[in-house]
Image 1 (cartoon, rainbow over the protein chains, first blue to last red):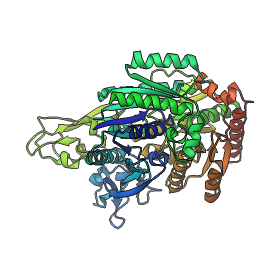
Image 2 (image 1 turned 45 degrees about the horizontal axis):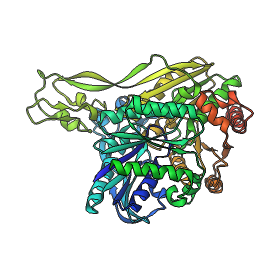
Image 3 (image 1 turned 30 degrees about the vertical axis):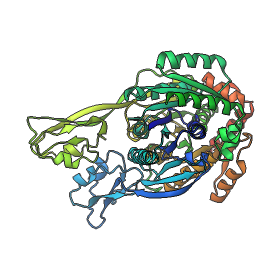
Image 4 (image 1 turned 45 degrees about the vertical axis):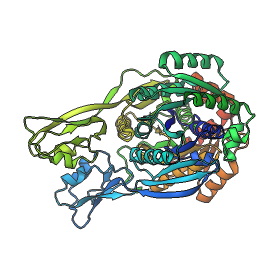
Amino acid sequence: MKEIVVASGKGGTGKTTVASSLAVYLAKKGVRVFTADADVDAPDLLLALGGGRTLFSIDIKESEKASIDKSKCTACGKCTEVCPFGAIVAQNGGQPIVVELMCEGCGVCKLVCPSGAIEVKRTDTGTISIQETKYGFGCVTGKLKLGEHNSGHLVASIRNIGRGKAQDAASDVCIVDAAPGIGCPVIASITGADYVIAVTEPTPAAKRNLERLSKVIKHFGVPAGVVINMGGYSKDFETALKDWIVHELGFQFLGEIPVDYEVVKALVHMKPIIEFNPDTKASKALAAIAQKVGEIL
Amino acid sequence: MRALRKKKVEVPIVAVTGGKGGTGKTTVAVNLAAGLGAKGLKVMLVDTDVDGPCCATLLGVKLGAGDEVKTFKPMIDEMKCVGCRKCVEACHEHALIGLQGQTPRFFEELCSGCKACKLVCKHEAIMDGWKTIGTTYTADADGLKLVVGELRPTEPRSPVMARATVMKAIEELKGDGYDVAIFDTAPGVHNAVAQPLWVADLALAVTEPTPLGTHDLKLILDLARELELPVEVVLNKADVPGGLKDELLKICHERGIKLTAEIPLDEELLRSYIAGEPLVKKAPDSPAGKALMSLVLSIRDKLKGGEI
């Protein structure tokens, strides 16, 4: 079973559009597909696949948060000074409050508290569920609790569950839709994968973020190819970008998807574009890209 | 929550956020900052999207040398270490591993820099070491002060880097008589987004009329509610064919949130994006330029009226 991660340094380049169409294309070609949404912060893959039927759902409790016992707290202020995340705040010398949104559970506050008023408690990280999509393949998806930091752990759990379920179903490939950026959840998605599809746009901002992502991909030694999405409005820039991808980054160039408002309509109808309108220009480009990916597999 | 969020500087801070990636956060932030600057205000623009900072690119600014952001990492003195494992037990991230009687092994990539190990060591065997997690930059862009935070690729700790960027900006905001600061955030609703929202007085949630845009907008509105942070919605790509504008209006209406600007699709916006020049300067009379200018005026009026 091969694991393909769809990633991008910049947000909104079309990761989910590529992942959903790739999954449906390969499934229709007889490849046994499984999918995983590793963007636990804004999980959209299932939406793009038209939703699913929940087969299994589990709460993940891997976060830890400081908790202050007000009856023991003397408001000495030591914990507010040492918290590396600015997550313990006090008003005008009063008793401090833990802002759970920002607490990473390191426990330094507990260590410095002279009155033993602080405990570090396990709390919810988020939820993981396995869904059956209308295209016959499964999708493991997660939802991080609001403002949680522990997304790397949740992503690792999603990948583990996804790999397990994909192997149970004797799948040939698991397609992972990653979070935008280059931080913890992206690293947790890329490490140990078989291939990364980096989605970018022909703009200087997206190029810069692709370069940053390429450093992470290379660091973890994963082979990669690049898809240029929303192409067609700046030919010179695109030609130079393709050349740079192949010669400077040393990645495969998988293809270019032109700007096509049918993609928006497909999103609104919650169908992968390749399914919604197979004859539109974006679908044709995606089919060619999916075929290339199929060959790489 | 709002009382707790009292920040260390008086300058009003507007955060530009939105949940989903690629909705136009940076476009709005850069144009808002440039537009307010053009109206005579002293403005700081802060890029807290440390995974993929783009403000400088959109302003056509080359960043010079920056300041490295370093976090603590333990340096263990093997001569002093007695192998008591206190540090191993205290390390929440399991970055220190070792058996009783052994000097622990340190796995740098797991270390959050919290110093718990040093605090529990009774033998002074742990000294301060430092690791660079990213860089902050400051630059002047046509009268606009720019502060940028950039995570070092392969470093996982975006929230720590975002926090360092926010702190750097707050320091820079002291003195110098700034009228307003615009904070551009990362996509998502995670801790690295919460850091700039924590110090903000108003959030603009930039979204687009697609199911993914509305889905993620609800998440960021939930986060703003949790922080008791006033929020307004900016609808980008408002007239995209087949879009879900009605549904967005419904969400705003149900939650009592103001739709403060609608930016239409406009090729001029794309051109300005690629050219690295804010649209409010390059083509203020284009359809998107006008929409952005009206947002600028609305924020300026709020600042004048002391509403932010």
